[in-house]
Length: 331
Image (cartoon, rainbow, N blue to C red; front, side, top):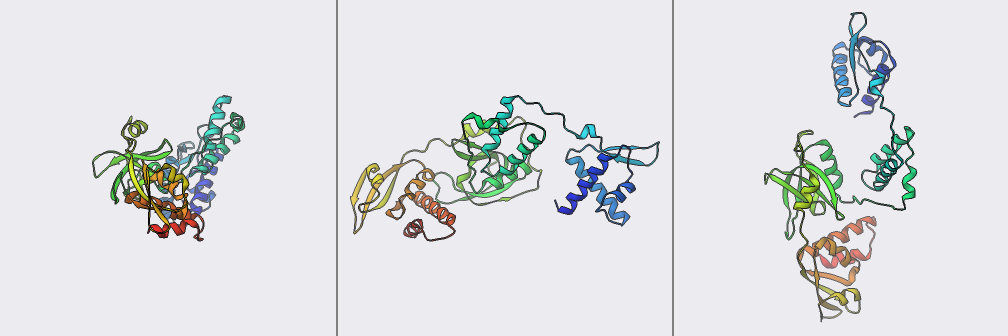
């Protein structure tokens, strides 16, 4: 919404709240800045503004004074929220929930909610005495776009690399909700290609999530429980897999103790066999050893390490780091 439109709508709300009698369209036109001089243009803009206020949930009452021309007003009793009464436990929970999102994508919305509660006289500082400091990590690149799609109820498209796949495929989804389970983020919705409900892990989404339809075109089935869907269809624990890595001679002692076998290699490198479950969870651990470890196989673990190192490098504003050296080894 443009600044000019926002100011005009705000002026319209203030004007209609301040009056006790019904104001005609012409009276509103003269009292509220921002309306055009042209009669036809004003009529079209005023009709859009009325519809906008109704969509925002603002009660617009239509009536007339002594049977005259129809006018408009906003009854304060219908516009104002009732007093909020919360128990100490309820305010503590609300404050705690907002603090969960302080460093996440919903930080602005959470802060705004706390501000409104405080403006209503509700003290939300009680959560500070609970002795816990929760945090929700929403650093997944796909999270903001999927969250907006769920709120805007529109379809999306993205590239997705499933478990054990060496390449990504294009998926088209009507998203119903985004949720976290065991530290991982998932989106639940209707896959329009497979014509069935699907659960996608956000960490497996490659590249951007793009809109793929009109806002408001997605309807969540009545009674659907996205948490139950995610838990029932969530990925089973990954079966143990074998990885072959090169270890710099005399380095990476932690991996050497873990390895099932370590073979002397050529020059300054040894070769080791490791067992792991999921590439995304194992890759950050391997990356900690920097240039002392090079993944040879399997390809998805190798790619996961490269992606992790590149993300770390990007976080350092592109300055050369140890991760850059290992990324060059892997490529």
